[in-house]
Length: 217
Image (cartoon, rainbow, N blue to C red; front, side):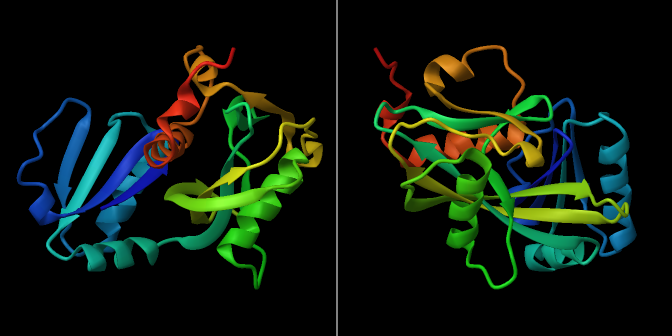
């Protein structure tokens, strides 16, 4: 299964066998893939322009072919990012373009995925003494480049640690704030944060100690 964010809505690509037990839900569209990529483009276009469906699931008997056909329509952009935890069990967040986010950025030519993630976290927040621990998740986000071409950003996320320290947001990248936050208190507030970022955080919580969400005295 592949999950792609288009704006704040979700496009899922699934194997047909996974659809048998999936119940119809309001706001969710199920559609079989007929092998014509124009069909994929029509659903992408719909999700870019409207919020008619919160989620669209396209399925096919050959998921590998469906994924290949989908990617053929887009420019692939690879990126890396991280969730950084300090000794107070706080996580490092950034604030950019009106929403809270996690540090991430595009892969430079010749870079490894882990190198990109470490570099981007350091550049966007000014954090030092980073240590990378484990892979968290890979996310997919569809967006438009400056020339209006559609791109699929494939971001590799890693869990990291660093000592508590002052941070310096990278202003030239539009980052207004870089702050340590107690996740339990912070995420319970009414804040603007991308659904894809919440997916990353949920995956992080699933593979790390549950104590990370405990309140800090």
